[in-house]
Amino acid sequence: MVRRGVPARREERRVSPIRRLWDLFDLRSDLDEIFDELMEAPFFTAPSWFGNFPAVDVAETENDVIVKAELPGVDPKNLEVHVTEDSLDIKGEIRDEWEETGVGYCRRERYCGAFERTITLPAKVKQDEVKAQYKDGILTITLPKVEPSKPKARKVEIEVA
Image (cartoon, rainbow, N blue to C red; front, side, top):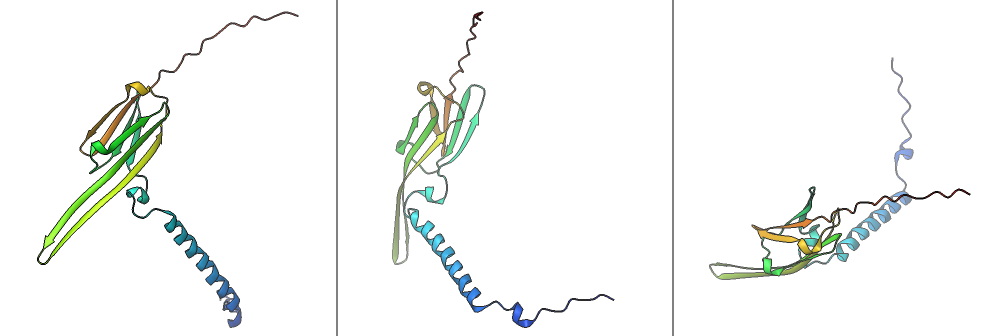
């Protein structure tokens, strides 16, 4: 025969009204934080509000660092790429316009927004030899690495005191 514990008294299982009130205050403060975070983000800017834009892949080979950025619909004339020896900046502007017409209506939409992304490079690169190519919405940037300086060994004379 299995003995079961005595059930708790009904009053002990209820949550006190003061506890419920504090739970409501906690919920209110959580919602306030969520709305504060939403209001800090700019609403009508480029898709960077939705995460890191553009999406970027960084690969390192023996001699190069290769960066591929997905920029669908961006005109290459509206792109700027700046390189330092250890970082890469991609800036651009998106402009789009479309029109839809039907019986009794004409809908025209325009969109314009700027984006910027800075990528820290995994190795130092030669700024003067960087090449960029834009094809089918993919910006491919090839950055040749700086050859590591070879440490020079120097013999140190030992003085006898």
